[in-house]
Image 1: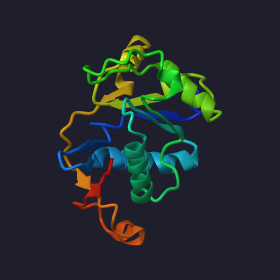
Image 2: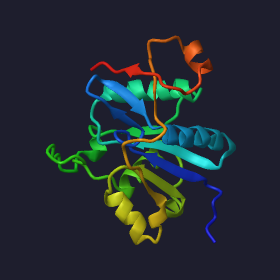
Image 3: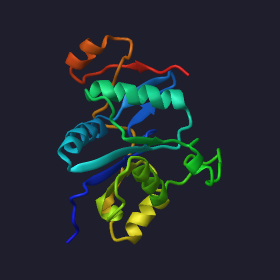
Image 4: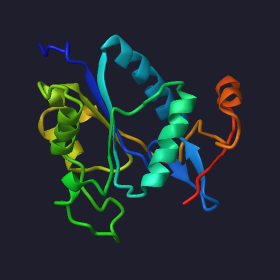
Length: 189
């Protein structure tokens, strides 16, 4: 039996997992993932979840920050993600930059271990505690499978069902009171 006192480690991809962006630069949030994040934030406060990470191949820091800020508002928390590791992070520079391939940089357990060290959390029993949400298979999903934990890779299939959009131009108070119906966030590059 695995000792789970250390708590779950949840790792999320951004594009086509948490969000999708349309041609008009509107961001659509995956309602199912937002609900998972909502529960994870509460469970982190209880110690059931040890850390929530964003591991993305997106290199647009401004976009990532805008989405993170919007999630903080939606979920009424100060910091959804304990650590964000994007495509430009130096730790990921060893990965080949193949821009013509959608998932240009592979995601690995080493990336998760790095993030855990950054937030001073243990890597003990990592593969048993790790849940990885992504729309693409990566080395990380294969590593989970090889460790006998294929069910710890949650394959998110866009387009999203039960999505909503947000509009970041509305007041924070109004957004917090409003239900998660159809709203839009305008992301500027």
